[in-house]
Amino acid sequence: MANFALIQDPETPNLTASTSKNVIINGSHNFEIQGFSTTKGMGVGNSLSSDTFFVGGHCWKVHFYPDGDRIDESGQVHVSCFLALVSDSKNVRGYKAFYKRTELEASEFVKDDCLTIQCTVGVVKTFMDSFKMFAQLPDLGEFYGQLLDSKEGSDVSFKVEGEIFYVHKLILSTRSPVFKAQFFGPLKEKKTRCIKIEEMHAPVFKALLHFIYCDAIPDVGEVLAGLDAKWVATTMTQHLLAAAD
Image 1 (spheres, one colour):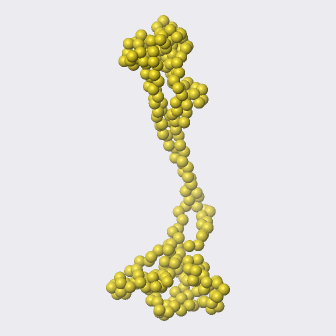
Image 2 (cartoon, one colour; image 1 turned 30 degrees about the vertical axis):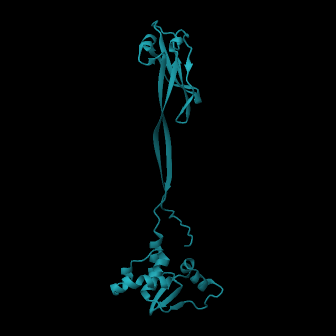
Image 3 (cartoon, one colour; image 1 turned 60 degrees about the horizontal axis):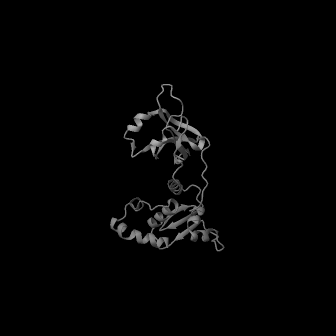
């Protein structure tokens, strides 16, 4: 099939659209502190840090302060726990008075003198999809079918069983090397205004032209309206193959 450049009607505006998608990416990290009892008395502001872990394309760490990150005005010792966004050096969320030290030591979170902190991180990622929509273009098969039916601009005709078919050299040439050689080759016929086709039925030739123009098999019932149904069913395919050859 030939290549065509489709030009949109300048009066028809282009339409654009975009979609924002928010997706939550979750990840977890277990931070174990073995020998938890030995961390008592480390001092206010001193911390233990987890290894770096990755969630949502960012680097994270957990900072745990056994004696708190600052002096508690109440006089009680609270442990502090913070999540740090390492890649941007920012604290994301923290608990200054996460747990009373005495309560934490007696809780189920400490087993065999090992404290396990499970940190779950959810990162909201925003994705933007944008695309451009053009005005709907006509179906090319339908367009060329209408051109064949209208006979507009035809520059050659075929006579088959007394019936005249008006067609276009350029379209036939792009679809068939035989027609191309006949119309534009070195041995092109000088008089090609009307070409007579022998040994072919007119309905078969009509179906063949429909395929050349529309790139689709026509509705045989419409092409062969009025003909014997048995003949249609048994011989149409054979005739089309012979015509194509």
